[in-house]
Image 1 (cartoon, rainbow, N blue to C red):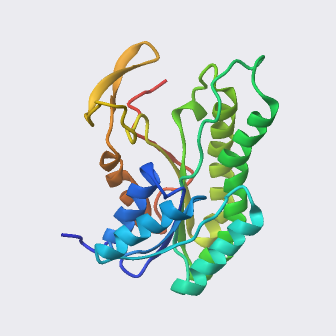
Image 2 (image 1 turned 180 degrees about the horizontal axis):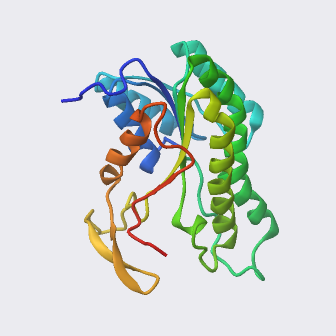
Length: 249
C-alpha cells in the first residue's frame, strides 16, 4: 500500500510515454501526486495516463515535442491550469540517436542529439521555474547518463550532450538555491526496458569498461532513488549526481 509520500504534489515527467519515464510517472501517481504524462506520441501518453487513472491516480496526457520551446511552455501552462501548481519536474526525455565515429557522424543527427538531450532541458527549466518559485520550493530531476561523466566512443554526441546536462544541472542548482528549489541528476546505468524476441527480464551482471561490476536493472529498481529525490526536504541535496552504475571511474 502507498504511503502517500507525494500527496498534494503536482509532477511533470517528460518522455513518459514508455520505458523509464512511464515507470516514474506511475510511481509518482501511486504515491499521490497529480501527474502530467508527456511525450511526442499521443497514443502513448494517453495510454499511460489511462493506466494511472484506472489504478486510482490522477493524471493528464499532454503530447509535447520537448525540442519546441513554445510547445514546452504550453504543456507547462496546461499542467498548472489543470492542477493548480507545480512541484516536481523530472526531465526524462532524451536518447542516443546515432552510434558512429566523429569522422563519420551525421551533422544533423549530432545537432538533433544535442537538442533533445541538452537544449530541451533549458527550454523546460525556463518554463517551469516561475511556477516552482511560486510554490516556495520545488524539485527538478535530470535523467543523466554515465556517458556524461565518462564519455564513450562512437556515441560522442550523446556523451557530450549528457556531459553538458550534468554541468547545466549544477549551474541551475546554484541559481535556484535561494528559492529552495533543488536540482539533481539521476544516473540509472543499464536498465532493461525493451525485450528482444525470446528474451526475459532479469537482473544480471554485465561487462562495462572491461569488468563485470554493474547489474542490468529492471525499471522498478530505479524507483527508490527516484522517490528519494522527489521527497528530500528543501534543505536537502542539490547540484548532486546520484548514480546506480556501480562505477567509480
